Image 1: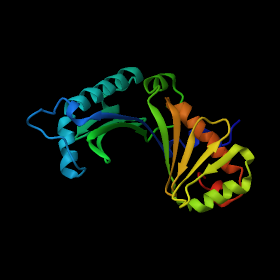
Image 2 (image 1 turned 30 degrees about the horizontal axis):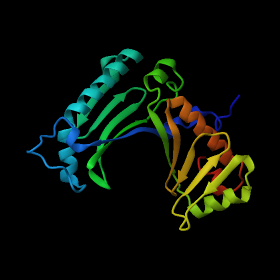
Image 3 (image 1 turned 90 degrees about the vertical axis):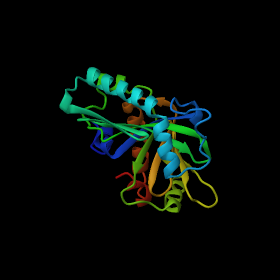
Amino acid sequence: MATKAEDPKSFVTEVRLQGGGELGLVKSLSGFKKGRHAVPDAVNAATEAFLGRLCMEELGDESEEWFQRARADLGYKRKQVTLEVAGARAVLSAVDFTFEISYTLESRDPGTFVKTRILHQLTTGKLGDPQFEELFAGQFDEIVFELTKGARVEAVIDAVEELDGAGGLRVNYPSDCRECTLTVEGVEAEVVCDGATLLMRFPRAGGPMELVEAFGAVRRAFSLSKKTALAGLLG
């Protein structure tokens, strides 16, 4: 039987699952009127508010569809699930999770938007539930874990290098050590650590349980080290 530290359900409330990252042209949104509107050339409060008005129809339709699916598939009653749409963000709040859809302008190309989906505040009872997993199947390709104490990137790099490949843990990093990328043998994902967060990026989108179990494998690989920089990273 898995110990509390090994059980993926023991840390599911501490992570958020992200997916989507879908790109689109601002001028393709239903609210954009050619000849009346101009494509944004900068990212600021005004252009983000403008994006919220442009994506109102798309965001409203998609979030309403998610609300109806969650209510029907998971058997929620009125008091157990709500939907709030404001600006370029929709928040579906249920008794077991919070699901968000947001539109943001791409910083390097303000004429392009990015649509992202985030699942967080997930209760352990829903993880692995067939209806829940089916609802969110194939939606997420990243897990983000906020480090409560933070970590020096250099210390993480040194700790991994001292393992010399033990536990299948490897590390790559740029010369300035602003971040490092960790890989674990047998896990189809890479983990990026910048000292404040760990971002686990998967090559393809999956469901909640699939991603959390893979995250658990990385967590166990960290625990093999007696170095505080790794052993306590996700403790």
